[in-house]
Image (cartoon, rainbow, N blue to C red; front, side, top):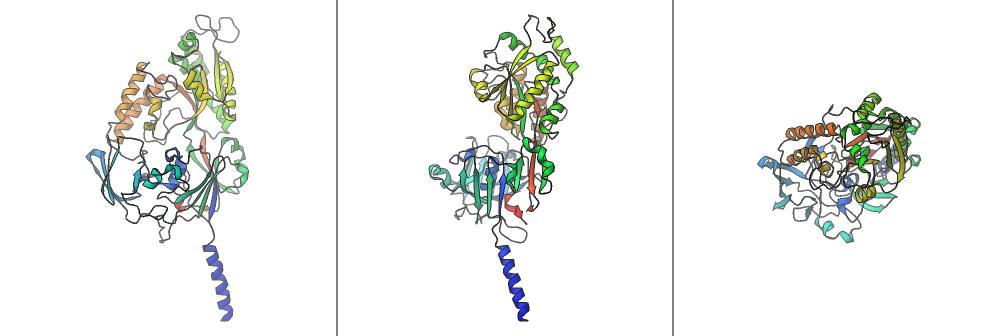
Length: 502
């Protein structure tokens, strides 16, 4: 009996030690730098660890689910929402959450929040609002917003508290002891005590979760014993070829005439061997997405874009607008004898270099001479002197295309081919302006989908820029990590409260 008790005591002690062991994971993510004093600058991967909203879209079930609000009512065709808050909520410092100490972190001054009582608020939107791929702004403590210059530890109602941020190194998060969620057994969440995001990481660092970059795709075969592989689809970032159509730019007028001709832009699109780029640069993992709208978005319409590798079609289009090899030197000339010689500015990164070299060979086959110029300050080139012809760079689109208004609208700051227009230069730009502005009045997802179908149809017909490929979004996850459910929209850590270590 004594021996049995002794064995039981040792076993129980070991069990207690195991249960109380400190649980920590280290995650390597490619996220941009942000200003810790400016909460609005936080990347989404950081936001969802610290802050929450009244309701959210479950990215697995695709249903609106309660978060800080236990229930809600929708009035006036979605223009007014009333939220009834949970009464057991606390901020990360232990202070109870009420409508008196919360701040609605909102970029739109037309959206109003009205307090009804300590646990009930009304939000008034200028137009009908439904949080499908258009989340509500996060809720933060008033004290955090009012004392930005004093912020050292950043907390909200989310599962973690931001304790330390070292730019270009790491971000350290500690468990929020006052987090409101519990698992099915009644245990308080999150399971992890600490979560560290490594910046500027290496695949050799033996991290628990890793966002794979294209330069490491070739190493996947050597990592399958240690990691599970999650290829969750096309990244929101695209390799984009821009063609300058700005009449205010300093490039030769005869080149502007080329670039403003839609047949010329289509000829370029049909001369790009995307399969070869995918094979040589992305080892076959990239996705051929021709639309600026991601296929997982409810607003994407398939088969509206059809520009595929076809050198004969490309040559024919160029011939139709007067290009011929008049001096038999292998380079085409226009009807005025100007050689089809183009300068391509390329962002300083390895992938863009390699894509540019393939583009150069592709265009040479149809009689175009491409001169590659490496440039650090691509965006200065884009929006300051406009003195560029072609630009190859990576652009990250928003999952909700409504948030890309500065690209679609002719007056937009990122209407890349001709930004800041006082009035639309092309008639088709005027059509897109009209359709895009109608989105803000649309009362249903179906109506918005129809509008975006027409925007994609017009975009495809006129091809203002050329999307080459979307790299894949791949995560490597160690075999002892449980409940990892990455989302293209919310990121890899949206359910950080239930991620655990075996």
